[in-house]
Image 1 (cartoon, one colour):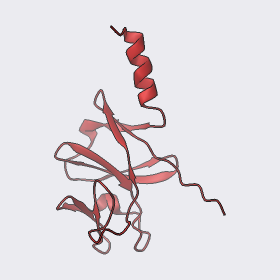
Image 2: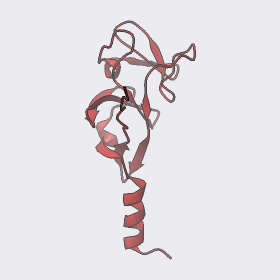
Image 3: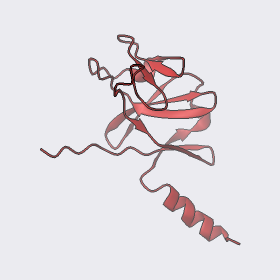
Length: 122
């Protein structure tokens, strides 16, 4: 049987690399919200109780407006020019690469996101 200290340690290990961004109730159904994690701008959505985190910058014209988009058929539609991205994969309907997606964990009604900053090796 685990004691409370063991469960605290496993929760800490489980959250390694994750950042708390908000409480679940701070997210409105089918409305995006913008956050910054490790200098990366992300868009977070709650759809039918599931929470998704994607990069907030549309690759089309590099507009930081994904969080202002609308949900349609499991996708987020960029409000600037209508490009669509799957909420789960970030990919476009043509299966082209689209937006980076980030792992989300919900613990005690708190939303945690793991954003790995891209490092360029030139």
